[in-house]
Image (tube, rainbow, N blue to C red; front, side):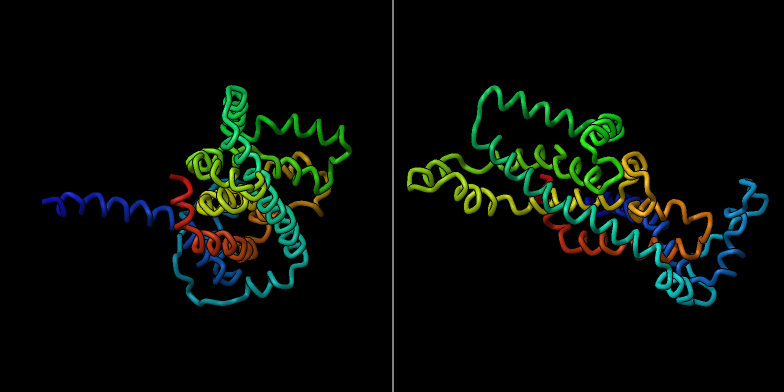
Length: 278
């Protein structure tokens, strides 16, 4: 009886998963179409007048698969420039934010007190606050520090984001205080306690914080539009949003390659992501 009750739920979940995967499947199919086939199937969507007078034929399989769009992408210098920008923004921000968050979380978890709780509450409020709310203060601070229209205007706010601190503090608080105190009594300093006791027990949380930070920064949109003036510094996410209407075939191929790092990281760390968010 229990199995029969699970079947409708399982069917609903499979249907929901297929609906979520449909845009990705359409993107991959579009990247394997020729420019003429894309225009034939998606012409009404790409019309300049903004009105669709004809039905759109969604195709999950190309009529004649071709690597034309990927060949055009390889020859597109702007794509590689923007891809490099995305890597330069995302990788350092992910590594440094995770390191800073781990150090701050250790301070919160190992030194209890009323002031710590109030400060942690402030971190939690900032973590819950949408990034759009802090864009204007970040803009004025970057102008004041002379960082506007430089890579540092993107990197520094990302490195000192509060989300990782909030996530890791909850996890590090589970480390037995007795173990930490025993290590201190044996002569271990705070740095050694942090490296050899806390971090090994928080690997899943560190993975989860790093993965979520990577995903968030890899797809950033508002930050570069507000804090950068020169388009040569824009990441790939901004360039893709402008490419859709101009060269849809190239946009399909670029989007597929753009997805690969996130899919690879998720595939490697999905188990740690689930455990780190418990």
